[in-house]
Image 1 (cartoon, rainbow, N blue to C red):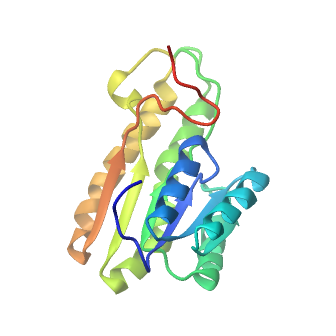
Image 2 (image 1 turned 180 degrees about the vertical axis):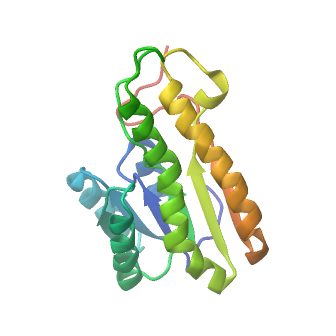
Length: 201
């Protein structure tokens, strides 16, 4: 368990029911944070995770949204504010799913999907939640990137381009809001062992 004291902090994890999302929600709660758990379709997993967080003695709420839609982001902003307060920590982990193939065969919808879920997702989250961080003069934004942007394997062009676009956005955002004691960082995990993805070998 991480030895980080997040007592009295509120965290929000988009894609909180995903493979990485669940681990991050649990870790944040273990460190003392109250957690808002976002899901798109996996309501059952979200409810179970909420129970786990509460069993750790932390507050938790569950919010449903399409993270590419401004109205949805504004709606969950209001819900989280009412149930927990203004998030101090935002982890943007949600990403759209598509069928990868070669550039010459990949649909334009796949590129649009990745732009919206990687770039627009982070724009909408910043616009909704950063103003309260500026008012408090403290905040942490963490976006989940991928080693794919460095490896550039065949058939991964939509994913890689979406995450590279996200990288540019977040580098600019960090310069714009850093003076308010708000950090903007990215984490690019490699292959991870999870509940549904066993260790190799």
